[in-house]
Image 1 (cartoon, rainbow, N blue to C red):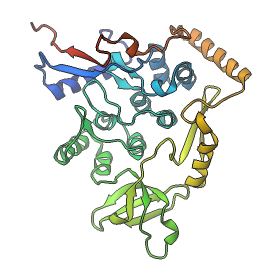
Image 2: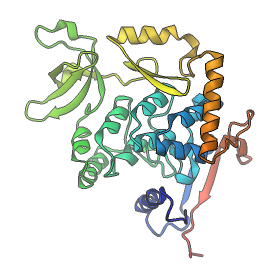
Image 3: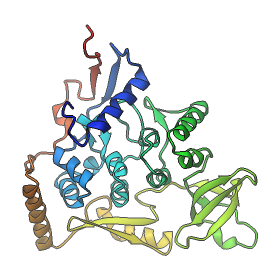
Length: 330
C-alpha cells in the first residue's frame, strides 16, 4: 500500500519486514505457494472489523456460506485470516464465534505461518487472545509445518524479547494455556475426574500446573500426569456465542453436559446462523445496508456471488504460485 496515511499502512510494513526476516531480503526467485480455495475478505468488512462494528461483519458472513467465510483471508493484507483480524482488534466474542462456526485455528498466512506463530511476535498483542486460541488447539507452524522443540525454544526467546514475557512463559510447557480434562483425581476430590479446566501456568519448582476449573472458576494445583489435553471444538466448546439479528450473544453454562445438550438441541443448524424471525431478519438486513450507506460503502456482492477466490483459479484448480522478485531487481 502506497498511501502512508492509511490506518493499516504500518501493519502492512511490519508484515513485509516479517516476510523478509523469514525468507531474507535477497528473495529473488523465492516461490511462495498457497491455496487459492478461499474467500477474499471485502474491504468494507476489514474496515468494520477495525472499527468493531459487528453488524457489518455478521451481515457479510450471513450472505454466503459461513463455513467458507469464517476461513476468509485478506489477500491484500498477506492472506491473513478473519480470525487473525478479530484477534488483532481484541474482538474476543467474534473470535469465539468464528471458531464455533468452523474457523481453522491454525489457518496459514502467505508465508506459511499459523495464527499463533504470527500473533505471538507482535509486541502489541496481549495474552488473552493467545489463551483463547491455545484452548482451541493452536500450534506453532512455520512454512506449513509444526516447529521443532528447538525452534519453539528460539521462538520463546524472541517472544520474550518483544516484551511478551507472559506469553513466552505460557507456551513454555506442554499444556500451558490449554483446555484440559482431569483424568486422575487429587486426594479426596474424585468428583473432579472428567471435569475440564484451563491451564494458567506451570510451576517449575513443584512440577505442577495451576489450573482454573471451567464453570466454577476454582483454582487448583495439579500434577503433570493428572491432565490430558481436551481442545475446544464446535461440538464441545464449554460455552457458546451465537448471532441473532446481527448481534453476538454469549451463552455460559453450568457444565459441559449442559453445553453439549444445548448444541445438540440446535440440530443440523450447528455451525450456521441461528434461525430468526423473518421480519427481524429483514429489519437487520436493512439496518446493515443503511450502515454501509452511512459509511459511504456499498456491498459489491450480488446474491449469487460468494466472492470466492476459487472462482478465479488457474487451470489446475488447486494451487496458485507467485514468484517473488524484489523491486528494482532484474
